[in-house]
Each structure stands twice: as structure tokens, then as C-alpha cells.
Image (cartoon, rainbow, N blue to C red; front, top):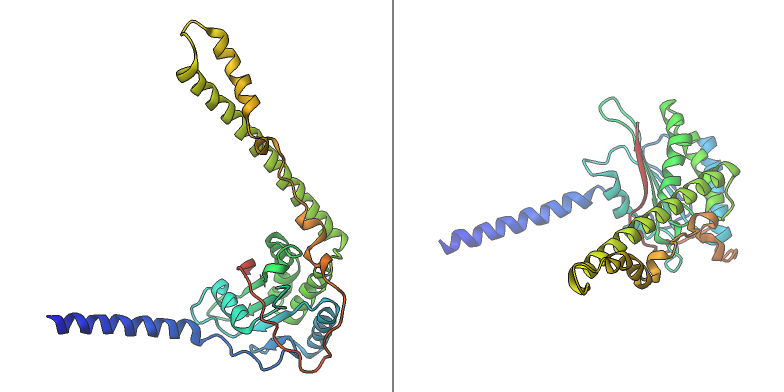
Length: 282
């Protein structure tokens, strides 16, 4: 019996090891250098757009050390694109280790047997300049229409033309307006939440006062006064608006504009990601 149990444990351990191997075996190996920043393994980006994209990404890297990496793959081999991107991001170390300003664009082209998928995956330090809603908008407005025309190079070129200025804190007017509207919506929702919380808190304090501290059941002025008393003890944090402006300027404003590397022999910076970004399919 003991031998059977031991055999089962060994079998389970082997299954777990095989699952890990299968889950990570399809991740492309990290290139030795980050010279190109475009890794078209699916061979879908035309040469003209390839050159423009590469130059734009190199210029951005020279400007503030932002690494935007484009990766196309023929298949995700059953993996969710979010998990795939996270593993590639971490294993390759995209972005500067201190700034965490890496961005990964992964494209799985559409085929006869499967739909197309795209994801813009951001590092911790890029989330301010490229919030999830903006990543989604770039995909919906600029990339998906080009994908549907089977023009992958144009799709990536359009995306890079929006991502590069965003990582410099220089939003086109359309994007700036979009982010401002979303910021106002966020602030409005925050104010509503504060009001609802305050009303609930005052009512709760009134009930507590009524059931535990009111001198007599006939002392109705205590009932009337209890909400006012509760309001006076409501924490100031509940009356404080939590409005922020993280989308208005982007996180890149604090970065220096130094060019610390030449175009040859760029290395992976060791950046990390918390899973920010957005995905789309067509």
C-alpha cells in the first residue's frame, strides 16, 4: 500500500513538472541583444514598415531608455495571451530595471483555423503614460482596422506612432481629450462614491446613537440630532475627493532625456510588469 501511495506522489510530481515545462516551452528565447526591438517570428511585417518602426523604437530608447518590443508569433499554443506576454516580459526583462518603462506588443495573426489576437503589455513604470483604456483605444481605433485588411506592418506602425509620444508625455490632441474625459469620469465616480459612503456612515451612526446612547425613547430631539453628531465625527477622509491626474501628464515626465546607449549592443534592462495593458481579438 505504501509503495502505491509513493508511486502516486511521484506520478503527480511528474505531471506537475510536465505542466510547467509545457507552459513555458513555447516562450521564445530571449535574443542576446535588444538591437532590433522587433521580432517578427510570424513574418507578417513588410520591410518598409519594419524600417520605420525600428527607427521609431530606437529613437524612443535613445530619448528616455523606454524599450518598446514588438513580437509576432504564429501560435500561442493554447496559452492565454495575457499569460504569454507576462512570461515573455519577465523572462526577457523588457525595460529599464529602475524605471520599469518597458512595453511589449504581441501579435498572433489570424489564420484559417484561429482568430487573431493582439496585446499591449506595460511595465510598472509605463502604466501612467499608457493606462489600460488607452492601450485598448489604440488597438480598437488604429490596429484592428489594419489587421482586418491584413496589413500588420501598418497596424504596428500606427500603434508605435501613438505609444512613442505617450511615453514622452506628448499626447496627440485626440488622445489628450480622451484621457481628460476618462479622468473627469473617474473623478465624478469618486465624488459619488464619497457622497454615498458619507450618507451611509451618517445613517449608521444615527442608528447606533438611537439604540445605544439615547437617554429615553421619548427624547426625539436626540434622534434628530444624531445624524448631525455623526456628521461631525465623520472621518475627514470620507469627505475628501480622491481625484488624481495620473493620466494627464504620464509617468515619463520625470525621466531624463539622456542617450546612454548607442544603437549597437543594446541590452535587456531587466524591467518588470504587473500585468497592465489590454488585449483584443479579431
